[in-house]
View 1 (spheres, rainbow, N blue to C red):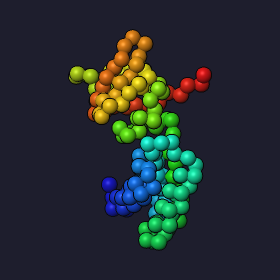
View 2: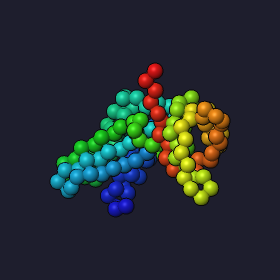
View 3: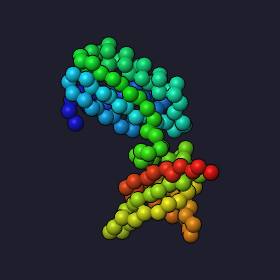
View 4: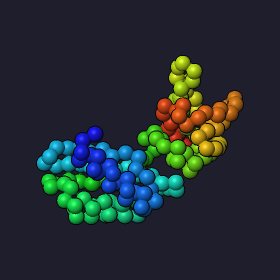
Length: 151
């Protein structure tokens, strides 16, 4: 990671922690004439539009007061959205009783299942499938996506 991105990630993490959120990802696109900074934040509760606006305002103030970006830039602060896989264990509890598609390490291969998250205990997650409950450790998960229900 280059110094510029390292600095933006650190500032974003520090601010998010102060505001009660955590950073999921920071993506920097564009070139030196026009940068686009995308900061994805989440929280143990749901993140509202007001929360995102607050993070955006405060992050803009820091970037500008410390003169971190001299050229034109656009800052986008958003929650990860349903299409992004979960990355951190602390994202799971608010999704209890939701359906997931899970890809995980099983023995010497990858396995996949769809199931409802029914509990999170320390680093273990329990999912209910049609046939049985599956208990897996967080570090076994390769990818976890929340499935949207339209019913």
